Image (cartoon, rainbow, N blue to C red):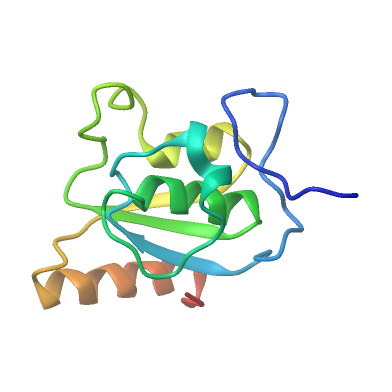
Amino acid sequence: MSSSPTLTSDSSKRASTKGRLSDKVAVVTGASGGIGKNHVGCFGVYWRTNTILGRAICLAYASEGAKVVASDIKDVSNSPTEKDITTVDLIKKQGGHAFFVKTDVTNSESVDALIKEAVTRWGRVDM
């Protein structure tokens, strides 16, 4: 029985490059929000979310091979236990691909800039 790769704090485990989302580009809003690396396996893969699950979703997507565009108002978490490392740094530490775009989702111009940056960097947005 095979299991899906997950991101953990163990640096011996790496992000999958040939997972279910291999070569997909995922834009995730609220990417700096709580529930981090220790809970990824509890949630599976989601598309729409709120800021509480943003970091976990980024990590889940990356663990399945997606290139992640992490977006939020700031790049660090509000969680006191997770504020020392950004979501992008967690993904890269595990061998995944990600970058951060500061985005205010209440501002349509900011969201337009997010999508434009994703397309400029990786050619498209898949999810």
